[in-house]
Image (cartoon, rainbow, N blue to C red; front, top):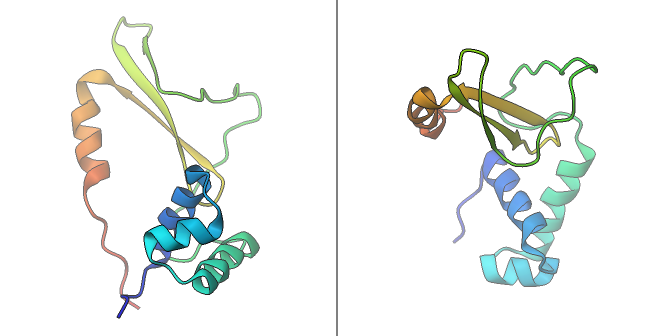
Length: 121
C-alpha cells in the first residue's frame, strides 16, 4: 500500500516532473504513481493561489532591483570579501535569493539541510 505524501512531497514530485521532460504517463509509471492522483495534485497546485502546508511570509523585492541571476554567482563585495548569490525557486513560482559570505556558506547549508517539523494540526 502506498503511503500518503505530504503537500511538500507533492510539490517536489511535480517540480521533478517539470524538469524530467517525460510525458505524464511515463513519469507516473517510473515513479509508481497513479496517473489520476498525479492529475489531481497537478490541477490542485495550478488552481490554488496559496500553497498548502506551512505558510512563510515573503516580501517582494522592490521593482528597482535588477532581475536575479539564473545561476549561482560568486563575487567580491566592497570590503573584498567573497560572497555567493543564488536564486532558489519555490513551488509557488516565486524565488528566494540567498546571498551570503563564502566563509559562512557551510553554516547556511547546514541550516537549510535541517528538517523542519510541520506544525501540529
